[in-house]
Length: 59
Image 1: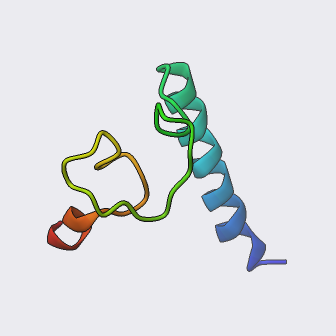
Image 2: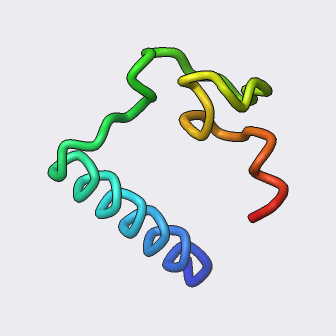
């Protein structure tokens, strides 16, 4: 039972973050409405809107 407290704490923090982001009007996905893991075109409107892009490795 003792090992469950860190996981519950982590879950609480993630829920609080999601709540605050939603309260600020942030979008869950990019404005295009698609969920992509990778976008390789650095000149597209999708750049830096998904999980990873070519710039992910620099920061």
